[in-house]
Amino acid sequence: MTPLSPSHSNSNSPFPSPAYAGAGLLASVQVAVRIRPIWPDEAKKDSRYALLADGSRSDSLTLDDVSLAAKRSTISPVGSTPSAGGAPGARSTDQKQYSFDHVFGTNASQELVFETAVAPILNHFIEGFNVTVIAYGQTGSGKTFTMGTGASGSAGSVSDPTSQGIVPRAANLTFLALEAKARDVLGFTWSAKVSFLEIYNDDVIDLFDWAPMSRVPATCLYRRLQTLHGKLPGSMLAAMLLLASHMPIYPIDTGPSLLAKGTQLRQTAATGANATSSRSHAIFSIVITQGFIAGDDVVGSITSKLNFVDLAGSERLKNTNAVGDRAKEGISINSGLLALGKVINALSASSARPSAAVHIPYRESKLTRLLQDSLGGNSQTLMIACLSPSVPDISESKSTLQFASRARSVRTRVAINK
Image (cartoon, rainbow, N blue to C red):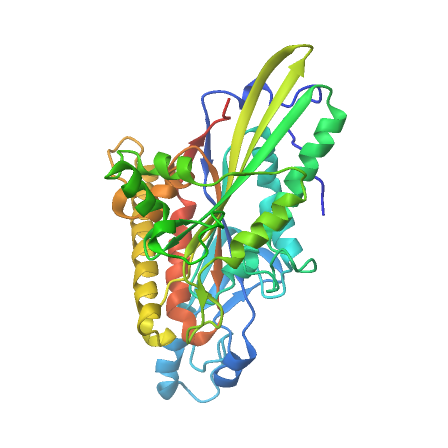
């Protein structure tokens, strides 16, 4: 794993140079796309690939709309060449090219995804900028595997060293970099704390509140706020985050163990589309404070926050065969994602016309309210769009690609938190 080496830091100070500590830098949301392999049970029904990427890592992909090609197959001339997806009668108009900051093919390793897309922005986190990594995509597209926020023992989780996901890798690398800096820079000090929230059926739940294991409504931060305040205060976000448990990180190896404990409490269930479907949106946050002491004087400090957002996958109830509680969860998940889509559309429009007054509907859901700073505030954001290449999933893949394209046009102004 490549060590972190902040490119703009002064070797005698933990703080960035003045050029990077001004009123704010304009930054675009970065977008990476990851295509998972076709599963064996999917291949039995249809082994064609509707999404094609050039190798393990590139910056573009091709969507081969084989559903359109198949409609023409009955009138295709004899000897016509099949499309890349395998459908006869395909024409160039059936294919669409998409470009992103990173495109990872089906053979891309967890390490490649992390080193290429995530490690570079961790340097900015160490420098004092807020950073957010969001995983988006339909259910069963590999978001939780990519992020590494699955239950202990599952592929990609903190307990799987060979294929650890982004969150445990990022936590380990960040804490090791800070420990190394403390050894190398005289007077440098740091501290870190983590929190872990999930949004389940529109309730915000503290996954580090281990005492009430029964999942009764009293464990929900939202309802706890109602109990404490009678009604929600004006700033729901500030109140929720203040009430959430923040666990200190010391020694540094406590980070992965805290993540593993929190993931055990996450809501998961089997559906027709995914045997271990996440039934909630999850936000794992790391807050670090860096200080510099010269003699008896504290020169200053900077505080930065790193958010990892593992969104539950969009669902079509007819595909997941969900009923009862599973159907209720799916409706809640889709409602939050719909609100997120509205926010991204509004931010995209605002970025295209900076002088125009565009209303951003953050308050339509708790998800968008909690992500307000990550999406349109002071944060450098990376969105990882996870995709299934399977032909039956082509409609969901189109929707995800369109969402990712709009997200890439969003611009934010970021500044160091002093």
